[in-house]
Amino acid sequence: MHIPPYYKRPAWQRFLAGACIGGLIAYFVFLFMFGQLQEKWIEENLSLRLELQDLNKSYETLLKNHKALDERSKEGIQIESIDIEFTNLKEMRIENDRPMISQLEEEIRNEAHHAIGRNVNDLADSIELFIATIENKTITIDDFSYQATIRRIIVSETLSLSIQLSAAN
Image (cartoon, rainbow, N blue to C red; front, side, top):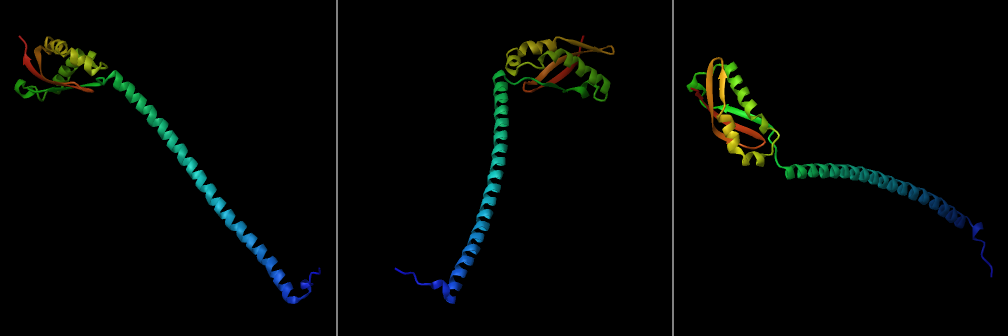
């Protein structure tokens, strides 16, 4: 069996040369397209990894916050500050006397300071004792004596007291 000598004919030579050149061009086009796809895949992979890291950090932070809130809710809400409001400053004619008002607030805060940091439920259980502590105190400022009567009390993170003053005997 004999293979005919096609390599000697110019038409076959052009065909074989075109096939080789076409194969090389196709190979380079394949390499370019594969490189582009690989580059996009790597960029997408990196961005997804960064996003995953951010989400993991956010998850850990939220988990820590949740645990802290859970512990805080187990121990209950604590009183953080005291807000004092006087209801009858005009009747007592001391609405413009700022130093006296601040001294009155300071005296009442001194009586109620033990409530700061206490659990709201604990204070609610002993609210009668708390009210009696403030109402039984006679406040003396600049030869004037006042008796405080609590008209309204709101127990939350901020202890709000509405106090009515009266002249003490």
